[in-house]
Amino acid sequence: MNTDVLTPSVWIVWGIIGVIGGYMSGRLLPYGAPTWLTLLIGVVASCLGGWIFTRFFGDTDTDIYLSLVSSALLTAIAMWITYSVARRINGGPGPAD
Image 1 (cartoon, rainbow, N blue to C red):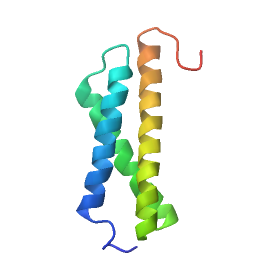
Image 2 (image 1 turned 30 degrees about the vertical axis):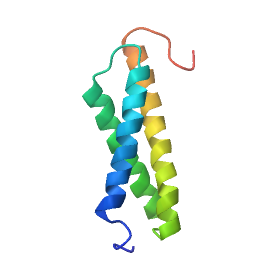
Image 3 (image 1 turned 180 degrees about the horizontal axis):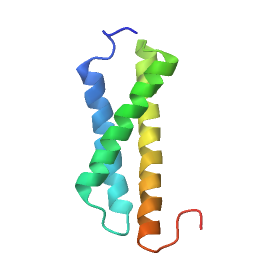
Image 4 (image 1 turned 90 degrees about the vertical axis):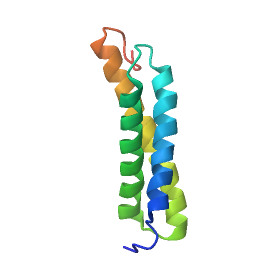
């Protein structure tokens, strides 16, 4: 693991991806999920997705750029799950219905 590549700026970019993804997804939730919750889920999912990617595939400069894509993907998956849970709790059909 090359610690020089996972600098604070990489974590900040992962966090920004999470904030953007969480905000966009929160705006799509029909049940008015709290903004802080969607932002928190987005940031955690994004940082986790990027970090997991670097653990499995490496942390060279090219891999760090690819980890940005994986962090966005995990953010989208986490927000889809949040959307599904919110709809089930509020009695509406889920995305698969």
